[in-house]
Image 1 (cartoon, rainbow, N blue to C red):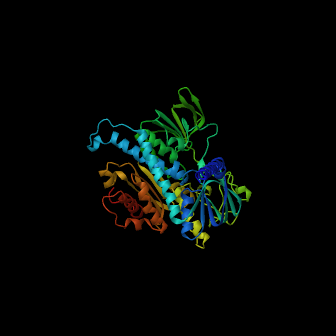
Image 2: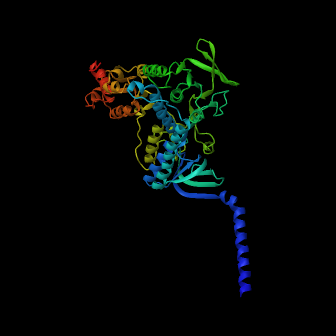
Image 3: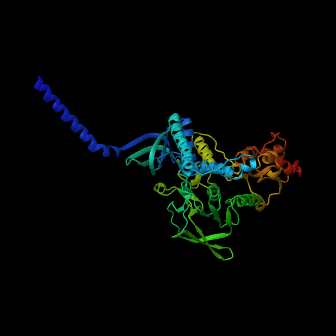
Length: 504
């Protein structure tokens, strides 16, 4: 019996070892396995602000929903390398700037203020990680199935995902929603290495503060990231092809106000100027420029930030496999229900026409899936606000004065300077202005433009008012708390409807 027991144990040991060895040998092949998800109602390709919000809303409405994300975390550009990390750096760099340059005048004595860039970057990464993992939690809470990998549309009812772990997932579905967002627009002839020649992604993770930083482009991304590194000690020069900063759509008076503020802080601008070339030298990066008069110049810098805009991410998605139409910019035309020319394939966000804004994509995502279950889609693009998160912040909703004038619409303007606002005075934060444009005959609000410390928050009052068709007088007659920056908006509305403000 003892002999039999020993032999038996030896055989069992050999069998167990063989099984384990076999598992070890076959483990890579198991990870490369294929799987199929059948009978889904909706596949959302992309988990940025538009995609993840659409997926959650669809699941809440009872649709069996799958969200495909090619990255390793949810949130797309916005949460990972866009809106969220940039706002973390903007906020903390502003604190550093105030501590170093304003505390003494505010009666606060602090010695030996130093920058700890790795700690600032870690704070940024902590914010990003919390929010991206939060989406994963929301997906689980709402029953959204997630698949990590690159999705390709094979038919109008099938998406094949090349999984990030090397496997493959086939998803059969009734509807497909393209929410893949956008990518950095390359500058011809300039190769980005994300170290010395960087896109916005690299500019969010520089290892040290450059002595000199050159920006190609003074739009939203340029002035925001330029502000971060200027506050931390860099000499920043922005080269802008247009005659104003702030990008397309900004009111010219507002753009000039922002430029004055940023120049006071130390940023330099070369407007009406194009970049001809950029080359690496032993001393850094040399940029060759030319102004509208044909005069050429050179800029030397340690780091070059290329921020000339973004383009829709619609390539390599298999859309041509099913005949989805795209324009010459790679954008997907859609109808009022966000349907492409293939009726069960939808698109939202940066891949369709309109401003590339996270909150626009979110609203489109919700409206799109509500339409799938029978809702009536509606969005007023004139009431989608835009914000530049510099200091002071800039925000607007509706149309600029130039656009209204070009349309031949009769209008009137009311303005109020932040220097005359009591809260701005007490905060010693008086740069900026509130500007209200109303219809000359009906007084209905056509556009609201703000430059102030809290423009990004205050603009939402104007957006709500415009969504409900308010007049300048409507806001002027709403009692605003005192002292608040919001009183500047009220005074601008008083100026627009009555001809004169009270406190200026």
